[in-house]
Structures are given as C-alpha cells and as structure tokens.
Image 1 (cartoon, rainbow, N blue to C red):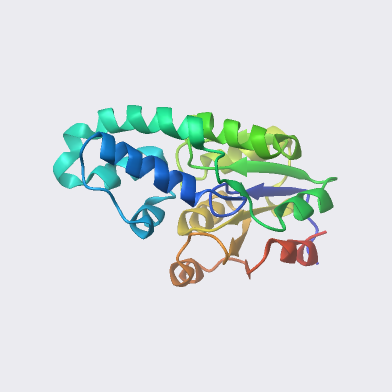
Image 2: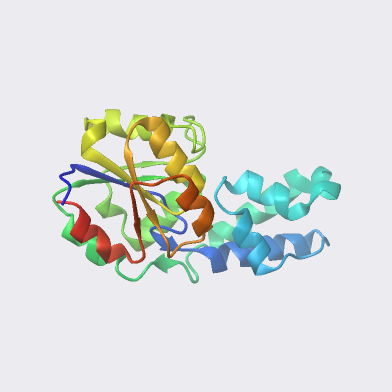
Length: 213
C-alpha cells in the first residue's frame, strides 16, 4: 500500500454520476433556442473541459452566435435541476469515510457555482478544499489548480494522489508532478486514459482503500 496524506478527486465521472442532469439541461437549452437536440452519448462525450466548451460543442459550429444565449439558459436550468438525478457513485461515501483522517479535495473543470451546490447537497463536509474551473487557475490539464491545492493544504507532491476519469486528469496530475489513479467507471475513454499511463487504474471506488494508507 502507498502512504499518502491527500486524495484529490475530479468531480463529474469520478465522485458523482451527473451525466443525466447535464444531458437534460443541455437538451432543454437547445430546445428553448430551437436548435437541434443532441444524443445523450454526444453530450457525455462533450463533458470534461468545463461548461463553456460543453455548450459550444452542443450548439454546434454553425450556431456559435447563439452561445451566450445558450449559456444563460443552461445556467438557470442546471442550477435548478443539478441534483435531480445526480448522486455519489456507489462506494464513494464508503471511501470518503474510510479516509476520514486524510485530506481530501476536489479539482474540477466544472464552474464553482455548480460544484458548490452539488457538493452541499451530497456531502461537502468530506472535503478540505474545492477548486473549480472558473477559480482562475486554468482548466486541467493545466496543473495550477492541483498545485494550488497542494499549497493550500501544505502537502508534498509525493504524498498526494489525483483520482479522475479523463485524459485531462491524468495529464494534469503528471504536469503537477503527482501520481494519478484513473477510474474505469466514469465517462472517460478507457483506451485514451490508458495511453496517458496513469499510475493505477481501478474499476470500483472501493479499490482505493486497498491502494492507499
């Protein structure tokens, strides 16, 4: 087992199963703007680089002039409905409780506004620090949000691990100089994640309890 002091979690696809609420909000936005709706699989593939890029992809190249309008519509709907179906993945609460004595943080490309509301609804007390995509530290794979967490919690790189479900997470963790555990149960592409060479790859959250102490 590997000794650590800090677990940094990605949010969507790692801590929370949120894709259904995201997809519903995107398609309601597109319908209100009278733009073609997207398949759920298309929307899931757009997740990971923040809401702004999600919506730019969703409205499509031919409709970028509608982006600002789409962002406003999406914000209102998603804030109102971001906890309709969103839950911690099975096993996550067991893991968070198991590591109660360790620092835990969230590093997400999602806007802090949505992140804060979701975590307040599900269990923000588990986390010592939360950084969102609009906090001014760039988006993963930019390492700055991860470096900020290390500095804030005064943890050395060799005593931290990032857990995530995307190539942005894996590359971002490596860019920050910390080890990375990829998860196979989220929304990320398994082959692309494996190509980024994470230090570990797990299929269930509970496996973290056998990796770290």
